[in-house]
Length: 360
Image (cartoon, rainbow, N blue to C red; front, side):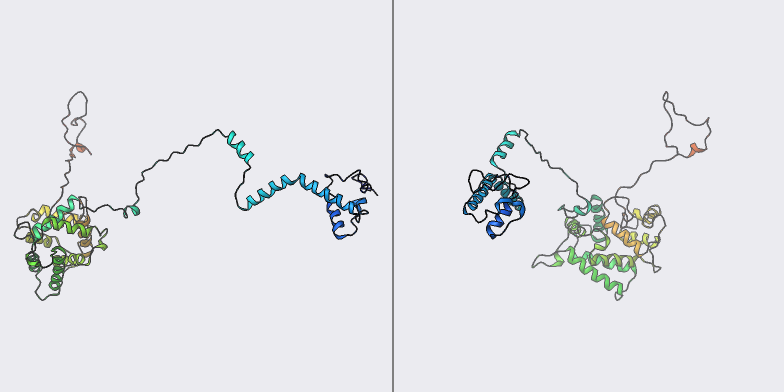
């Protein structure tokens, strides 16, 4: 019998010819016949008839060895690549690595530089920037220190100065010593003394003074924790409310006459804030030119602006006295709007103009 795709294989026992190593299609069937000692399929040909011959078995084994020897190097490379795929690493052969190193002539250079980036609003809150009072804040707080607490004008405030301020405020508001407002005022006064007059161990409060530098330092520590009005400590909120009650005329708002009398009591009877022109400007700034009533809420906003406002022209800038720069406006001449063509001073670059105002 002969196979359709190969030469006759019945002369295997003679030893003159052997099975070609590249005809590997019949090897699986031959191996099955040798191991199981059973009849292989018909397409194997004369190999099946000689399956029980020892020489045939030796030839088949030698043929398998020759086939495996020729593909041994490629099988090893395949196994190495398979193992490298499993470990996600590439194992390069020395020949390939050498060829890549010799062919590569490019060099890679990396430059690194630092870029300065400005912090946002939420990041700026975490930066360790020391809090400082603005010049306007210092001026406002020093006015209160000088005219409302330092009664003897010696530059220092003692415990009895706080009591004199409370008594002066009680007389202005016409409170009795047993009234609820005066009891709250004394409690707030006790808290103010504990905050601002800090005594060392074994030192009496009555003989401890408060200088202007200590006054500003304590306010700086207090306001550094306040970004809005709701962040103010409890004693400061009570102090704001007790001042409003002393100025309230009983109608739920602070009137202009009562505010003017307040300045005359604590500042001076002949102070600039007592003048009608100045008190009108102050009251207009507190009420936004009369658009709002100076009630408890408006007073709270003005008080918060007096404490936290760092720039001029705020609603609470002149809350306890005139301070800061006064806005100066240039004069405006409206007469040119009603003038005729002949009387108008027409601009010419050949002569100097007599105009001294801005035409609107």
